[in-house]
Length: 297
Length: 340
Image 1 (tube, each protein chain N blue to C red):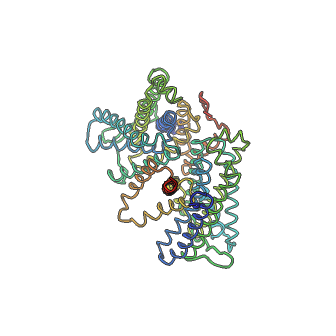
Image 2 (spheres, rainbow over the protein chains, first blue to last red; image 1 turned 90 degrees about the vertical axis):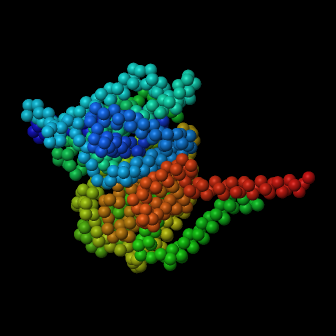
């Protein structure tokens, strides 16, 4: 393996790892605060990508107008998602019912997107393009890297940092964390449960959608993007079951392993990632980062 | 009135009714349908058997396992390898192949269970998804064992005691037989110590530990039973279809299976068969709505989960309960009126 290949695989893996990290963070946030394992999380990538297609290609808006519009619609979409899937089911006696409902939602979203935009993969413009509308490359010392990957990594790092600031530094985040840990006590000291859960949903869904926005120029925009959620699941387990930090580390690991597996084992890319998962289960069943909060009996 | 008051007797009547219904269907269905329709019905029966395995693990044990599809695939590929020219084996006894697949898959799932049951709840589910993904990747890529993207074709016909199961009609009977066996097994399991331990683990793990239930091993056994049933289904599928391809064993199929279970009702044997019937047969009968079908299906699933999380069978039993209560009340009123 020469140096050029190594660097490009590294960047590729980091960028995809960031996308998985965005999904995985959303998954863990929803799981902690609402107890919901969201099997529709992967569809958020697709929804984000389609909304980006609608604003950038169909409405032909310039980037500075498209980005705020996309972000706003992601947040609104997250709130709608919560109102439709979480609110009616929050008092259900069967935990499996919520999970199956999110599976149903995933198929609804996937079919709705296919009906609206057709089944073919659509191309979304790169954020940084050269003259012919193709992706621009950054060339340093003979190594050329796609700008899209660099931007994806940067956006990922910024979002991870923001989530960190929210939960570790801000009062709102502490309220959300408290509500996640113990709903009853939190409501006793006056933390509005519903509002914190709504905010969590809006953030978690938006994170997934932003991932879709960033990744769609590379992978094309189609409903099959939702299959990436399985990698996010894997990274959640690898990273440690409840911690956001662990999920990010796990996601980066999954992204890198996947990128380097493409060199020799491109057919078994999926298998390599999940064998890694099973090895981790054998060696470290608690995950890389242990949660400070124990399981409630 | 004693009929309703004594649950044991009501249970017997309902079991008899169910049995009569199954017999009636077994006689009528092959007469009424043929060709492609019967093939689809057969497939739904097969899925019904698989859903029963989910009833054991999820309905009784409270653990959502997606690995059923992987075990299904393993069973199918073992059988296909033994009974086709893919590995150069000739004239292998088909019944023996069936037994080997079931035992082999049982062993594999026991070992997997030892590994995966260390995890709890949702993370167990994720790990089983991992198993499905690894298996799906190997099924679709590894040529020497699984035929790669082409799959394995030309699986021999199943031969049961000198009788060759060839046409859809005889397959229907074979599948009904296996469905009844597995259904009876599941129903019996609920009444054993093992079944009650599973229920206890589902409802309160701490209590189960206090009562001396070995949580880990009970779960492992439940997982193994699921694997055995799915391996059986896989072997039957290979014989029935004559061709095994990797598209049958993906994660999407696993979610379909989960929907079948939930539509039918998590804890009901009749309901799970009904659920698999709805999910498999409806798309074939409503071909004109093809492009909207999965959308409608998703909406139905979400609405079902919101309004009747126990599925259609739960709805039926709760309606029966309500009717019984009303009858009893009417009776009480009458007797009160008689004694002033």
